Image (cartoon, rainbow, N blue to C red; front, top):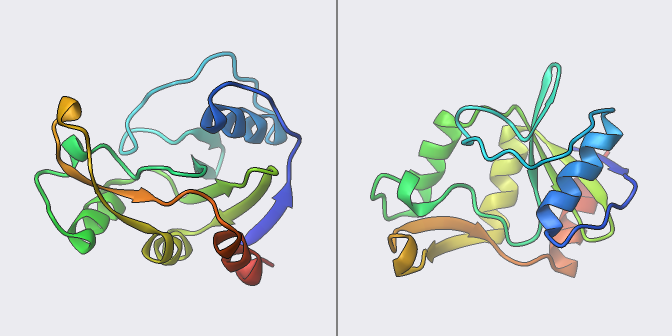
Length: 146
């Protein structure tokens, strides 16, 4: 797992701020947030690195895309079989980036995520959602970083 710091960007949406800051690190200019599916494109196209950017409290995919699956392993396997990205970047509140392979990201998700039901307004399906960032989570990432 690779670890490095990036320059902070302020934005009302913390996830977008982290994505744009990582884009700047890669030399990519962003003026708007794209909303392409996880199975079609990555958050950042950095040549050979197709990067999915994650921040505190992220969901892997919306519950409506989980095909009615109701257990963690099945939802993870569906996500892993369809995800377009080959690099997963968790960006902490202090803008430290932890780049992971799919296998490393799987270990992270299994350690810090849980099944959660979406709101009924959004269909009420189960999805995998990561917990809010904690000292334990950052310590886990730091212990595995190169």
